[in-house]
Image (cartoon, rainbow, N blue to C red; front, top):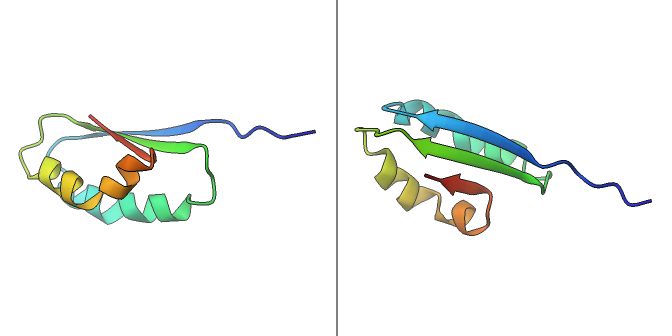
Length: 71
């Protein structure tokens, strides 16, 4: 019998909390890299602290891999 892994989505709403996102997101991705059916949904809620630039510069490989969905 093949066991199907459930889809897990971590939903992160962020506004002007880039420092906290930097501190936790990459660690959470690393800690869960062995679970293939997992995604991080990040909603930029009109952040004014360069969050968009940071995400585009630093998270492209995760976005392309489908590990992160950024809105």
